[in-house]
Length: 209
Image 1 (cartoon, rainbow, N blue to C red):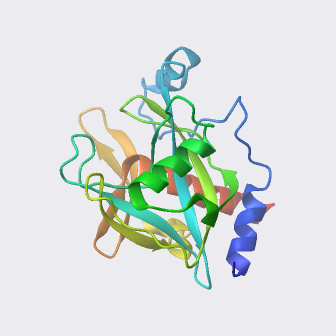
Image 2: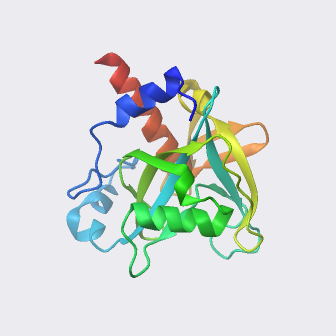
């Protein structure tokens, strides 16, 4: 794998992260009165899931993203990481993320090196998602799966780490806040943008130390 300064920094930022419980939950920008969703009696009802935040280890590192098929009932047409719910027998969270990435984009697990984790993220669909961050061989092929994934594209890591690229939006009457990130014609929002923002914040905090 090609070593770059940005990849070295990424490994430094994630060096002390781990998958063991208790794990920190990413804080939504919640409106007044909805803080209860971060309380234990609510979060323990969430089903485990994980995603692969796969970073191509190359001169200009980029994150592998997917556009979900329009035919899917849940989140059709939206942009996400490869991933999904924990299956029986999975070594969670890494095994789940690698299995899903292989199923969705035909990514060979042998081309992946896990380097850390982002904060768990609660979703409206009642999952507690663990983002698994990994380096992916620059030459590893990926292919979209027509049933779940319509397209695979790459998002520059340098773009993700620029705080000014994130916008705060509000959803519905309750004014639930969420992040949005626009790259070319791709609109990334909701949980996926929230996880990317979490990575950006971890980088920013690390730079201040």
